Amino acid sequence: MGTLSRVSLITTLIALATGLAYADQAILGQQELVRDPKPGVGATKRQLVGQGLEKGSPNTIVGNPRHGGGAVITFVVNGVTSSHQAFFLPATHWSAARTTGFIYKDATGTAGPVKVAQITKSASGTFQIKVTVVGKNGSIYLVPPNPGTGGCILFTIPDGDRYHVLFGSGSVIKRNDAKRFLIKDATTEGLCPIPTTPCFTDTGDGTIHDTCTGLQWEQKDGSDSTPNASDVHDVDNRYSWAGCCDGVCRTGIDYDPGRFCQPNAEAAATCGALSDGGTQGCNTCTTGTCTVDPYGLGAITTVWDWLNQVNAGNFAGHSDWRLPSETGGNELKTILDMHAPGCGFGPSCVDAIFFPTAGGLYWSASSISPEGSNSGSAAYVFTFGNGEGGGAYKPEVHHIRAVR
Image (cartoon, rainbow, N blue to C red):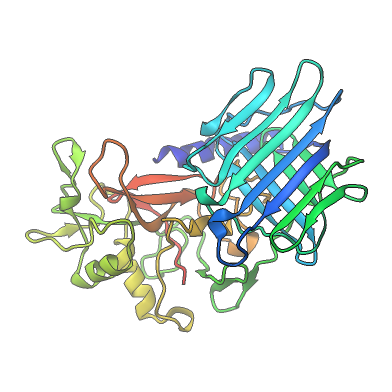
């Protein structure tokens, strides 16, 4: 799992060398659908569909989403409640199309709610962008603008170009209510206004309030590349999810969650109460000592012991801080800004209001079981370097950001 941070470092160097400048191409819009059949109660039923289609197109496909930067697709709707949502499509799910271009498939939602997408150009010159996003595979916050006046789909290849599918004046609005916004058949091309993120407010007390989700996030400090154990908010500090009894994490060649531990009873209790997906590692050692940094990678303590310190200090007037959950809510993803300059090429896919934000991986509260490993031996981690997530074994050492 540590390969994610190495990829981010490599692509950061590429971006610095090349300047990372997008060219913009416009594609004629065919349809944009934002569907919310059970407003306010049925988020898993939501669906987004977008399509641009242009015959005899002069446009070209520049860049390759199969590289480390993947692609970003943003749906924008304009109207009474204008809004937008961006989705990161990691490189691992892209393949080459039979014609010129690329196809994305993720039927089960392992990387998020985007089920299928494509950017292709046929031998006859038909240029096409298509994308389908389904709520049952992940979080969709975008809902019909009710009523709406227009929309746009922005397809970005980080090492290539940006493609704009605009639905402006002259487009035909077929459905326009709280359950469905459907706009079709654009008559002219144009560029999407690049979305900004209106959700985040700096409260001035060391926290950021997300007015879109209602979550309140810890704001980090420090950023001098030097950990500071006496400052629980230092961005350079890193922690293990769980330590190992007497520093021994494995039985044979496999990680053994039965050897995972917390350094004290208070941390064990917090872990047991606030972790999700499994409580492996939420215990103290029956014999011996819990080593919180068994591999000598710089862990100050475990995330649960750290969380107790944050709450004991009544941070920002609250003592109910927790770790982000990724078991369905994908909370860390909600603070991504996939249009931040350099996104996909370093630790910058986050709104600037959250800086400093460290490169590398961030822990969640959610236990997972990697294929071929013992149950609960890992936890979900996420990087703001490119918006990707996955599993990391609990004795590993990563960053953390508290939420409530």
